[in-house]
Length: 126
Image (cartoon, rainbow, N blue to C red):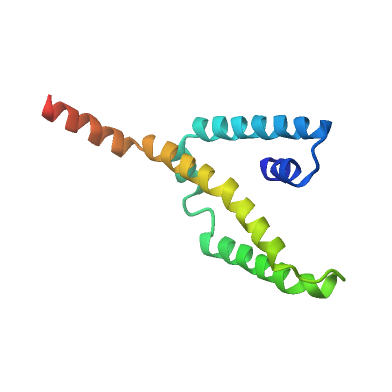
């Protein structure tokens, strides 16, 4: 929902609904951070290991993206606008990169092997 609300904040004219959308963006960010912070990375990794075909899932996503990019001019009377594609791409990166880095940091800090290494290195030096 965060992605959708960011579109409303930046693309809609300033009016009373802008404050509602800004509030929804703020709450969505807070919820996403709370959700990422409460995840048990090791449990997720164990549960999904071998159960998710990563290459197939990635291929399907890339294929659908290319299909959308190639079929859009054929299915709609609207001409293809590369600027619109770049704006949507930039908004996706604005949403995805900070969340991915934050999630990576949370999951890396919860890795038991890294915690054990930090504990043993602290005992050796102290």
